[in-house]
Amino acid sequence: MNENFNLGDLVTFKTHPLLFDLYIKGDGKYVPPIMIVKEILFENKDKKEFDDVSGNRIAEKVKYICVHFDDNKSEFIESHLYHSQLESIKSLNIAKVDEKKQAEGYIALIDEVLNYPKFKYEFGKIVYFKTKKVEAFKKRESSKIEVDSNGKEEKKITRQYVVNYITPDFVICGCKNETYNDLYYNNGKPKRKASTNFIKVKWFNSFQQKFSEQYLPIEFFIDYNPFKSKGVIAVEEK
Image (cartoon, rainbow, N blue to C red; front, side):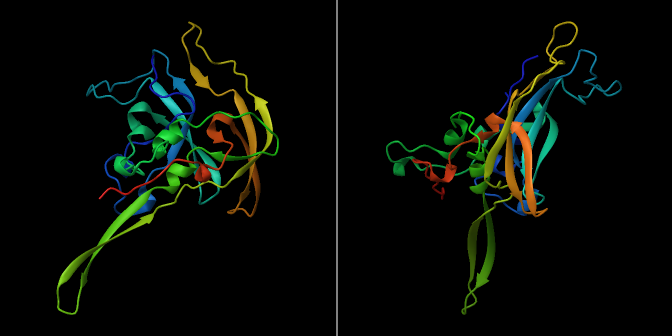
């Protein structure tokens, strides 16, 4: 069984509108989040993949546990999704770069995010969830018809950022190494892949009006403010 996504990869549900367009159209609340792969689950050979009557596919052998941040309740959410339901963020049309305006050393947003460097654990260090900058750069486009004093109609287009799923800044307050006893089936075939190096992060939970903390894989985070990184330009395509 060969998985197409790895631990720590950034993915989204395949209905994400920016997979098909540069701008979100319609209600931004229906846009799915950017998620990070936490675990890969491999079903055994007895897993039923096809319906007995119709022969249609109803499941897959590989499933992913993906994590995103619910900014309404200020908490992390896990989702179990099949590969055919997901797309890599490599396919997102977001913060497109105009090559003619590209200065030396500048890189596109998606390239920056895909190449975030690893960092070393340090108690009390401020860290940032890897999806933060991508979620912040989403844009929604809407249009309306305005009529001037002469009765002439003119189409007006407005664009604004859609910042749902934005994460707060986090502070490292602990760490642990996870060990697993169920990584393989009895026949030696892989059963699951899971992150082993976890850090405990603390943040202010605005929904509960208190500080929350949780253990998450260290590869979910970066240790520098992504909005202060050099070289990234976001240019709207006309």
